[in-house]
Length: 168
Ligand code: MG
Image 1 (cartoon, rainbow, N blue to C red):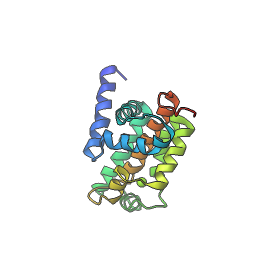
Image 2 (cartoon, helix red, strand yellow):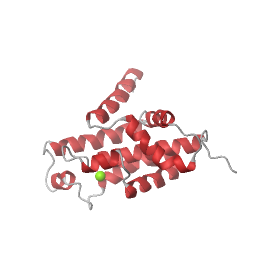
Image 3 (cartoon, helix red, strand yellow):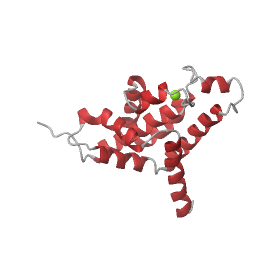
Image 4 (cartoon, rainbow, N blue to C red):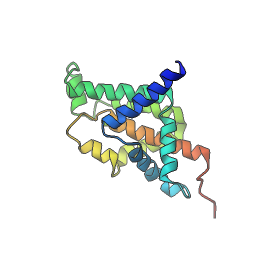
C-alpha cells in the first residue's frame, strides 16, 4: 500500500469508530481500567497515544473495518438468515465477534489476550457498557473490537515498561 493510501486508511478507521459513537478517549479509559493497579503514573494521554498506535496496525485496521461493516449491514437488515438474527440480537452462541476481535489481540501477545478476557467478562462502566445498552444500532462486533483495542494498547504499555510499577 502506498503511503498516502495508508494515511487514508488510518483516517477511515478513526472516522468509522467515531461514526459508530466510540472515541479514542473512551478506549483509553478502558486501558486505564485494566492497568491502573499494575502501573505507576499511567496517564490518559499515554493510553490514548498507545490506542492510536494500535489503530495504525494493518491487522487491527482490517478487523475494525470488517466488524463495523457487519454491524452496519445488520442495521440495514442486509445479512442472510439466520446470520441476520444472530448478529442483530448479538446472540451469545454466535461467538464470531469475539473470534474476529482475537485477531487484534493476537498481534500483541499473551498480555493482550488475558486483558481481553478480563474486559469481556467484567464489561466495565464506560464505553463497553454504553455499547451493550445502546439499542439504536447493532454493536455485536464493535463491543469486542473496542475491548480488543484497549487490551492491545494495555499490552503495548506493559511491554514498553515506561509505567512499570516500582518494586518496594
Ligand atoms: Mg459482541
